[in-house]
Amino acid sequence: MIQTTNNMDHQNQEEVQKTLDFIQKDRIIPEDPWFYSRLVARMENETDVVRTSSLFGTLALQLRPILAVMVILVGITGGIFLGHAISPFVSSPGSTASVNSHEEDANAALYREISGSMDEQILLMK
Amino acid sequence: MTDRELVQGIIDRDQAAFKELVETHQQLVIRTCYSLVHELEDARDLAQEVFIEIMKSASAFRGTAKLSSWIYRIAVNKSLNHLKRSRRREAFTLFSFQDRSGKERGEEVPTGNSSTDGDAVMEEKELKRALHMAINKLPENQKIAFTLHKYEELSYKEVAEVMHVSLSSVESLIHRAKLNLQKILRCYYDSNHK
Image: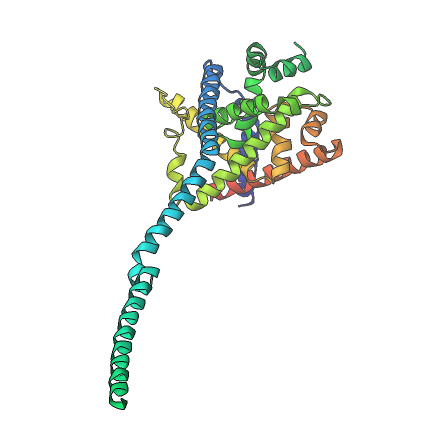
């Protein structure tokens, strides 16, 4: 039993050593003849992406004031349209005038009636 | 070309200088990345990122240390970031072990004809698996010091320069890494033989 355990320990120790020695084999990396070409291709690709994104960035910067002016114009136009849309519910200067003219008409009729009756009273007094 | 001339050439966007830098340091960078990530294709992709980083930040090289030390440091940082990213990705992937098959990851698939060749290839694969598993279990600093010393065959002094630590720290890190590796592998083979 003890001998079996000792044999196993010895075997394990050998395997541990073998595994650690394997580093000498593992550190050998096969050469990649296309490494530089692939690297240059990748760099060109990344430069294109950066260039495209910077082009969009410049455009966005230049378009920003135009966009701001457009937003203001849309706001003003929208305000005007909204003002017109809700005008029937609010008394406008025009509608006030018509109400006033109706009132004037009514007052004139009243005056006429009163003045008529006044004339009658004067005639009666006479 | 000296290190300084090479770096100046890269700053000046001299293609010949960049080509020379890549050709001189290509294997060093791929091997450093491979010793930490253990996947050849990932190591090659990371090596490309390392050279792109060198190109971008060549002006940051002060020339106080060796150029190779600076390149090693970039390669180590890129590899550690890659490992962190993959660990995060694996945490979200339920069946991540499916990605680990050699065929999908571009590893060499054994094509031995005789059974003896097949056995040898299988044994190598097993040794590689056990070694990578053990190295992966080491704490980060021990892993960096050990791989730079064993895979890159850097001296303790050079490892200290790359890692920005003292010589005695490197000695201690590598000593502890060796002890830990022995312990991890012994446990691994013990459980395999039970």
